[in-house]
Length: 265
Figure (cartoon, rainbow, N blue to C red):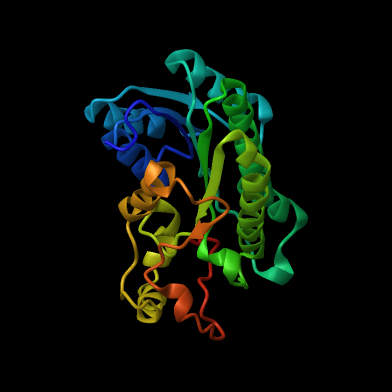
């Protein structure tokens, strides 16, 4: 119950890592403010939170729109009296090979994964500063922040940017008692990696390069998030932790080794 009495906002909470993070936070004692474009998915996540004995407020939210984010954070503060945690997790899949990617595809991913993280952090931080009780922000990056991608250069660039925004926010917000860290998951079993798992040869090549010889689970990402937002990580800020099974240790790109579609971890 490391998060008892805390209120956490999670974007992209309708499925995958976002849903697992919300469920883990509820199990640790937090009440949840959940944002996503998938309202049905939000309802399902809210049920998990309630089943864990905590309160949930779900609201449709487009993280590229400041008004939506302000409404989400304000609704949480009004309902629960304060907001203590922001997890900027929302994402999309929209990609193409490097030479074929058009500007719209490039911008769509940068808008959600990078600008959306910046706006989420800024909106939550303004609420936390006004409250005067500090807070914690966790941004979801990726192992692709440290790698290149033939088929998802927009995704890789955005995730590298998330690491940079995390460091900048950590410096800017430290005087207000707000810690900011990031998580860079490896290949995780979520709906967004379904296409990879539908290509057995490619999926096998990934696990062969992973020292722990498997893909991760959303619950394992959620465990890292729970640590970062708890007092157990009270002296950590500006860091990025990589629950990747050791994948970054063994990365050795080969021609044709990337998936044909847009999905990345």
